[in-house]
Length: 97
Image 1: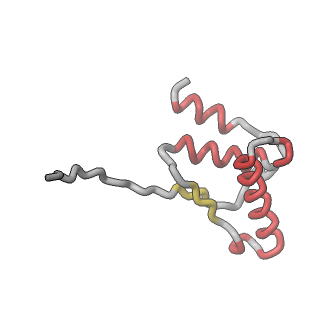
Image 2: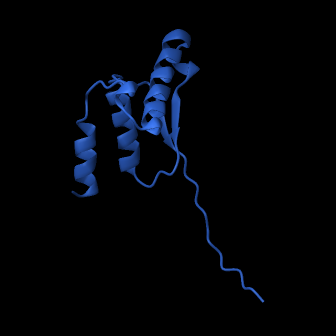
Image 3: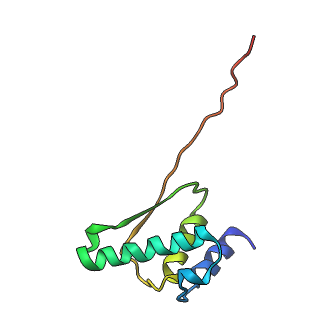
């Protein structure tokens, strides 16, 4: 499946899963962080927590996958900016003597 097809498929994900349904600790922590953001917004308003920054982002598909995690957490229309953290590293060849 090409990237556009993957993005379409990911956009269709709408299901509510609980973090405890997963064995993988990173998956649990990620879903719990999304639930925590939602609770913070409910208590303090949208400005209390409105950015979700993702590292190691290589494409728009990664942003869509992150949005799908919000949907999987039961947050259909998240009032959150999903922000890719882009860090470009240049490799340089350093001559050795």
